[in-house]
Length: 247
Image (cartoon, rainbow, N blue to C red):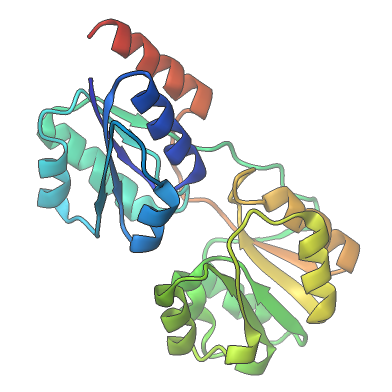
């Protein structure tokens, strides 16, 4: 069975390694070198690195028995493109989507990064941004001295911090997952009053961030998820195993 996994997420890596161990031929498509490094090396898995356009996605799916979209819950554009490519290639499509989190009652929810920046514009206090380096530009018009960005320790992330004007002393380049204790220590060390995040679910450490914000007395600002529909890891894995039996 030939499976193409579009990923970069924790559950995408787990699924690809599990399917390869079961005998499937797996191609994993990731956008960056960092994603390739995180994917690791295993027999039965081929990793393709780089941003793919519509034609590239369709070509990657040629002859595939299954397309698994294991991209991040907030990767709405990528998901739309992968769905369309799977239809063009005639490959069955599965969306592997981590469950949403229960949000604290006092969390501030906003539709996107621009709305979060607007909310913060007239509110004093330091801000910890944990939404990913690609969202930083939306906050660039705020007082940069109050902005702290926690990003992946990758060259692209640091470049995007620089483009957004984040002071180098305010960049926290770390690879998760993070415990609530570490999140709390960072909030207290940098005197953070507002923690901006996405609902990354369990693998994204959302509950740890929510707990730390509550203990630190910081306001939790959550970017709402895009509308999407998918299935959890166990459901997708069960489907893959049934498909393997038929091959």
